[in-house]
Image (cartoon, rainbow, N blue to C red; front, side, top):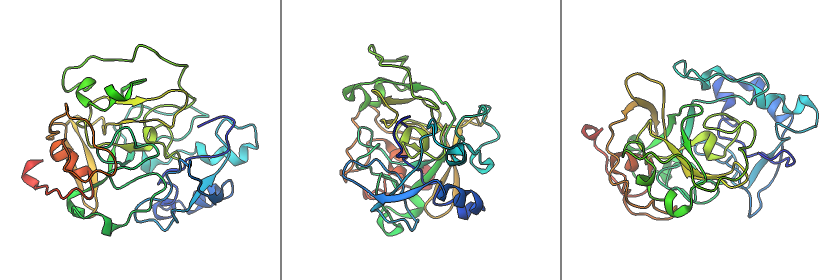
Length: 296
């Protein structure tokens, strides 16, 4: 988020607050947010599956470092217990934005998942409905756990970022950071460190790298960055709990079949099968894939 920009990329958690018994917080947020039409360059992440938000709207609010009234920005600092996993040791400091250990699935796209097309259930400025999930609701992941401040590799060029084996820890890669590193990260930057923010580094994940693997991104001078964002948790068993479209919650192990990570990530409007095995297939909504339970 930019310190001098009043526009905020609100996450899918804000519209569902009333369904989480957080009506009071939702109303408090409404008091510091106004609606405006989305422009062609909008990076809004508000119009999400199952929600009654128009795909032609987004939200505005003061940035957390704004010099305007603290009453306006205070709701963005609230920490919601239902969004935090007890097994995650990372705890926020006073004045930080609230954390989340849960994120929305953007499928198996990488270089276009911040503001372009995705193959998962969630996409910027796009309203998706259950009928759009032609691969089957029981086969399709909507949400997963993530690890706050999980390991991150940054500043990767697209040619490196789009091939997961270039940085996957599962494949024994020790890549840490690209050679040319621009200025320091923005304030409150890192996986899961802003539950209110719809930028994928904070509240989204890919079904490419196995749960618990490293995340990687292409960040230049801001935090609306695209990348390959891994699911993860601090569970001793090694895996993550995922919410599927049929409302079921299932544990996915870190040994899930991830297919061929040497293959480049599909682009958002590609309808081909995922190259990333069962894990990739469970993240796509309309690639004509069949996932059977005995594979995961």
